[in-house]
Image (cartoon, rainbow, N blue to C red; front, side):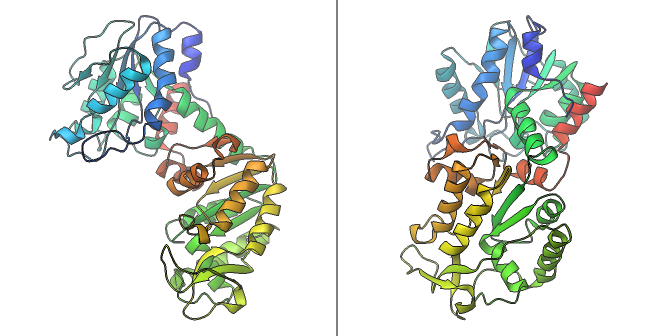
Length: 397
């Protein structure tokens, strides 16, 4: 993917004395008192900011936080706690500027936080007037927020369209490199794990991957629908009977390419969905009418682990079962361990996937952990994200 990279501009001493606007993803969770409860995204933004400061730039950083109403400021929408935390991490003041669209006073070597960009009227609709004002603030625009790369908004697309220079920050560039390695030029066999509650939410992803991968592993409620498509009993498990034909089509797509969708041969069931529910391991043929399938069984998990062990590339999105409850976590735990121990390049994304990675402590064993939820899913669908599109356009101009 041909894009301009901020790291290269810094290395070539092209940002010294320049005004740099960084679109970061600082949308962090907070408690009712406004205290940040998890600061991974803020810490992940630090390298780009430090890179800009070291290169002698005047640095402006902005982000969205939550879902504010444009033009209506509320204290809970403010980036003030984020600015405070960023100042702690950088070891220097990070003033918060509220009304910044019409101009920001800043000198080289300084860094400021520009208040929640989604408070600006026209942000979500990518208003060109707003985008041009943002672009006029800077000499260099840096997109470093992969989690917003699937949205064409003023602070993610429009500003990149009109800025003098538009480039990818180190976080976004790393995502692009990992995605390219995993999907555009993968080492084979390419194995994709797609799990979740509904086929409908990931049908386009399944079809897109079915045209490219060597093994397509399904889990969760999605696997239940595929089992139904194979005529297997699923009791009262979560599934989408209306999409059985779609599941069959995915299986046939894979079969036509000499690839496969492994169907579970054993599962873990319970009579209720509860933390204290009693788990029973049964062959798929033995699932009863009042059973809920809440995980794959150990035989299936071992088979899938073997597939992963032979893979050249693994793409992982979604846990295999209700891993939050230990009695239904075996499938996810086994696959997580298999991916961690595999020599294959692995890329993982999605909120539940990241939670599983954290639970089993395998962060350092995953080739690349994607920071974007919706953006990661759209990449798996085969879509070109708006942020990638405009950065490629600017690089080609």
